[in-house]
Image 1 (tube, one colour):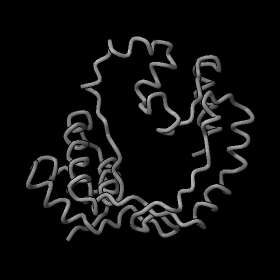
Image 2 (cartoon, helix red, strand yellow):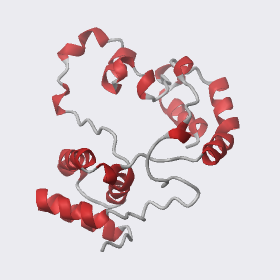
Image 3 (tube, helix red, strand yellow):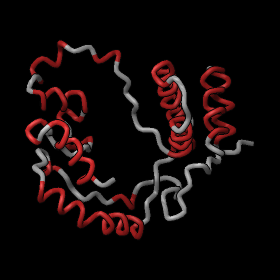
Image 4 (cartoon, one colour):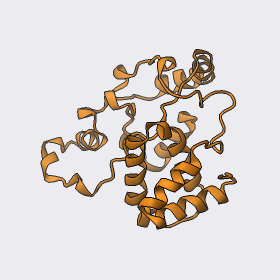
Length: 194
């Protein structure tokens, strides 16, 4: 999460004039859509209706145990393009049907302060060194009031997935291939199920 090092590599490869830095926050994006925002940065926003977004994957917001299962899947070597839309569609459907599988994170005020303090100097140096086009829309959100289970804290462990067995059962009832893919991902990541 060291933006200074990360952006320096991009600038070194493509040149400073080719790198446009923007805050990635839904509320700061044009039309609150990364696709429209990107077209605007390219200077072709007027042609947005000429683009077919039906083939793009809208990942929506998946949290909680569903997110942890996706993390396990990402750590495994599999044909991601082949499964991408199936995986995302099933995760989004489960998040809607079973909110307990995708509980939004609770972040304690103490943890928020620790994270902000840890990155304070780096962020200051980053904003001092680079021009961030929509930086004025960057605000310190109060994350401590989010509803959901307290799973993001000092003891965070993405391998602890209490609903894994129930999620797999639901996946098996919908798509055996996707369910087996997730089961393999969990197994290879050291997550015990059942």
